Amino acid sequence: MKTLAFDGRMGASGDMILAALLAAGADRDALAPVEAALPVRYEVGETDKNGIASTTVSVLLDDEGSPETDGSRDRDGDDGHSHADHGDGDHGHDRSHDDHAHDSHDSHDHSHDDQHGHHDHGHDHPHRHDSHDHHAEGSGPLRTYPEVVEIVESMDLPEGVEADARSIFELLGEAEASVHGTDLESTHFHEVGADDAIADVVGAALLADDLSPERVVTTPLATGGGEVEMSHGTYPVPTPAVVEIAERADWSLRGGPVEAELLTPTGAAILAHYAEGVESLPSLRIEDSGYGAGGYDFPDHPNVLRAMVGESEARSASNAGSLVRDDVAVLETNLDDAPPEILGGLQESLAEVGARDVSVVPLTMKKSRPGHLVKVICKPEDAEAVARRLAEETGTLGVRQAGATHRWIANREFEEVAVELDGERYEVAVKLASDDAGEVYDVSAEYDDCAAIARGAGVPVREVMRRAERAARDE
Image (cartoon, rainbow, N blue to C red):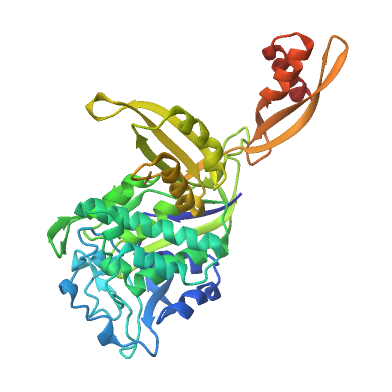
């Protein structure tokens, strides 16, 4: 299985992820849709981090961009971590910290003493660009979540890339909304809605699509330590938005190893969307690897994100395979007035617009009223249509999207097996569940076939099922 593995021991930011993906073999030309849609360009370079040759990525304004129209960003003073966005909400973008006073660093390689790097740290633009190049950090108007989604949808991206980018921004928006006590639709992204943040997120989605791994993993992500100054005051590392995103992620956080902010909201959101958490790197036959540089220089710790691409080896002595990762969205709503006929028809109605599975669970609601929780699994790109149909069918006033971003599923196939009863042969459909190595671990006879045969032969249904499943295992 082609696997992309990140070594998160020095954190991650948007541009560190871009740089690591390019260093691990992604095609620079894959970023063209972003440069065509936004007034920015990617500058890819090389630098040395404690003796390690590393790739850098900077998002710069193109020739038509004006630093006055972007970077100044009077809003909220945002310059200095105003993260208004990120800030405490932190959310955002690498900049959260990222607001790092980006000014000075031209080379962005601020010494470490910077202590909180809010600076760069995250964003890390380690770029070493000439003074005449204007960094795109913070450029563009203040945007809400729907406005960012509208921009992403207008970029003419491949369907899967667009869905990935939207999911990442949704993670960022939910984190920001949770921190500020607002709702997703009215959340202002501040820095995370800036052109360079959009370039980071969409760029990462394009490069990941170019590499096309079947599995993405990351070791625990280092957050750094200390405190950062944000528009609403001084906060400890990890910042509030990073903590919110981590709650929705499959991987874990780890403090240290330096007193600086190493993990930005944008970096956290990208990895929360794509990566499964592992305690240590899996066994890989390495095909390509590389390092994405961050903006800090520490005396004993190279500020880099390592990415490795290779074929996963067997996970155990028995050469057992794994289940297949399937990206999904999980929608939920609570109902206290839905008639049973409506609930019973949801399976069919929601399946028409993309639902993969529908569950209805009894529960007790406020004032001890009996109600139901409806949970729907669908593909991310179908979530909007499924939510609309769910609202139309039930009259619910709101549908929420739960934090799950993927599930692990078996490969499934059907085959016909012969069952003999009282001298008569019958054909029964049997479902075989297997892992990615082709190992069948479950056999299940189709109930409807077995029930029809049982009625005709005058035997219990479970006897037909038992014989059909045994026949499938024996083949």
